[in-house]
Amino acid sequence: MAKSGVSAADRNGVTEPSWWIGRKAEAMKKFQASPMPKRNEEDWRFATIGAIELGNFQPGQKGSTTAEDLLKRSTASFPHAAKAVFANDRLLYLEGSEKLAQQGVVFESLSVALEKHPALLEKYFMAHPVDLGAQKFAALHAAHASAGVLIHVPKNVELEFPLVAFHWLDGAESAVFPHTLIVAGENSKVTMVDFLGSTDARGAGLACGVNDLLVGVGAKVNYVGLQQWGSAVTSFQLNSTRVEKDGEARSLFVNLGAAYARQESRSTLVGGGARSEMLGLSVGNNRQEFDQRTLQCHDVPNTWSDLLYKNALDDRSKSIFKGLIRVAPGAAKTDAYQNNRNLLLNPEAEADSMPGLEILNDDVRCTHGATTGQIDQDQLFYLMARGIEPRTGAQLLAHGFFEEVIARLPDKKIGEAVRVAVADKFASMRTRGGQVDSMEKSVSPARFHPTALPEEETLDVRALQGLGK
Image (cartoon, rainbow, N blue to C red; front, side, top):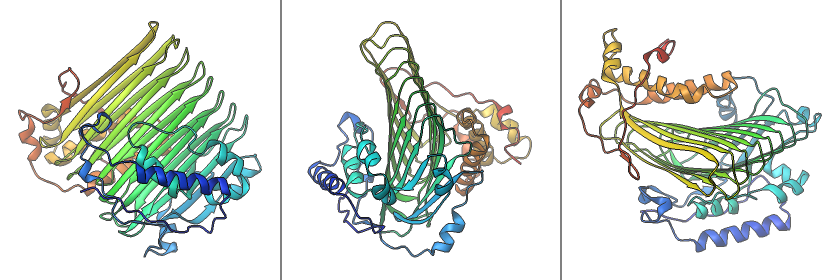
């Protein structure tokens, strides 16, 4: 049964301004007053509410892993301009902020930002909330948030290398509330990568994170969230992106860990020429559940958005996708695309897809769709004929399935880091011999809503070149 009992703790020695204290108090009241979601609510359709385990997790408690060990684990495989490391919402390490400051760039932990840049936080922190069903958990985040980074890139500054942050959940009774706030000034450019992980791959805990991505006029923001929480963690990741005139936003959410992971993402285009690309990639096994809810909101004319979410599901894992393209009255010349594609590696896996359109203008071009299919048996046989056992062959095909998503990242070294993380997830999944062979004629429980039938996914074996090395 879902439970709620998160308790407060002092973190990072923050001297909090009165407005911040007031907001946190109001947020806690909202959290406590809001009921737990119910499956018959449209925003929670198909979700396993009983999998949402809040328990009595403690924010900010000291974990058992040494700081030295955590810092060794907190290594990015690509060049980066700055790095922050947090464990149970406690800042362990920050590098690069002073050098960035010479360009006028702010890269600070939230605790330091409250003292050095309170006006930025007061204006932008959760100013454009996500409202796709998890408002109760957004309030919980607002009541406890003290860890994460504030990034402010001033006008005409383009950062050559990415910024990175590591957030560690250390201990089975821990709760973390990571926050990333990016404010990109006019004609600026920034890339941010969040690594979200547990010290215990099988550990429990609660992770409730929020991202605010504010893209100024002509600015470019790239964001990657790589989620590798322990296999018993309950996770919420809520993203709000707001793009002004001629701005470009691109986000990729990679879901590999957690028992239940709810990811909500809203992209709002508020200026002509604004562009938003929303990408998702999930690999599920055992009884993992990935609950994905998205909104592409076109408020003005001449805007563009493209969403591509892909899920590969093994064992009895499950994905839920509910996405909406909303075109406001007067938002002519809108181009919007939405595609959810699911690959079932086991007949007991489940994918529920609910793409949708709400168009209040005639002069637009909008498409949406979803496909759910199983491993192509001819392609699997091609690999087996070369000595690759069925389960490994299916995983190689799944690698090719994800290439369309990963290839959209402009930084190829970050893309390679995503490939490695996906490969590590597949390597951790138990081998089950020839189970894949029996899938050819099986009937899967995948559902597509509201009316279309599932279509079989066809994969190109040529996309596998180099993946087996």
